[in-house]
Every structure is written in structure tokens, then in C-alpha cells.
Length: 134
Image 1: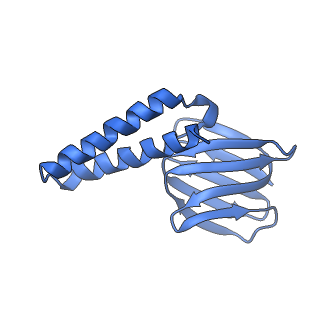
Image 2: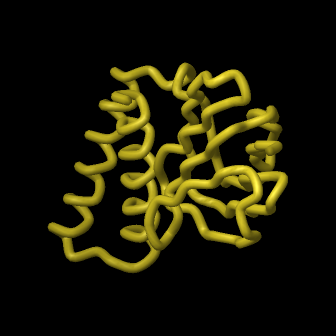
């Protein structure tokens, strides 16, 4: 089946795949060729793809959608990168800073948009750290 992952800025990857796992909003799911069609929201996390040659490729997505059809899996992500492009030290620092930001906002009892953005950044940072450690 054809696998493709794109962001608003660029295509991250496009190749033939044998199996795809993705972090759906209701839980992780797997897709084999011939899968029934469906559309799902994505939460921040890892997309793991076994390509047609049996090689595992790992991507980090922040959020988005995945469109599954019998012959293709298309990921439309807000932000995505390959595991190889994530530096563990930078991912750890980003996660630590995002946790501190959330904690500071909660301590000051600041909610609303500031807290929502901080939580979103924390979730994205966690996803990158998770993928970097895979």
C-alpha cells in the first residue's frame, strides 16, 4: 500500500508500506494492505511504518488526521519529522521546559488559552522525546 506523510510545509515521506501503526485519538491502530477505509484524528506520538523491504521507519507527529484506504495510508500532520531528525538532548530540554511552563501556569492559576497552548506544546515535546528514545 502507498504510505504518505505531509505537513502544510512539505512532504515528509512517500513510499510503499507493508504495515503502519499510528497514534489515533481513540488509541493506537495498525493498518495492513486492503484495510477497510476510515478517517481518524491523530494525537502526538509515533508512526511506525514497515516498508515494502521490511525496514522499519519511525516518524513523530504532533497532531493531524490519517486517511486509510485499502491501497493507501495518508497522514496529514500539523508537524512531523523522522526519528533521525530528533536530537535526544534537545528533545529532553524542550520537554523539561514545557513541563515547567505548564507547572508555572497552573501554580499561578492561569488557565484559558495560555494553558491550552502550554499543554499542547508539552504533548508535542513528549512525543518527540518518546520517539527519540525508541
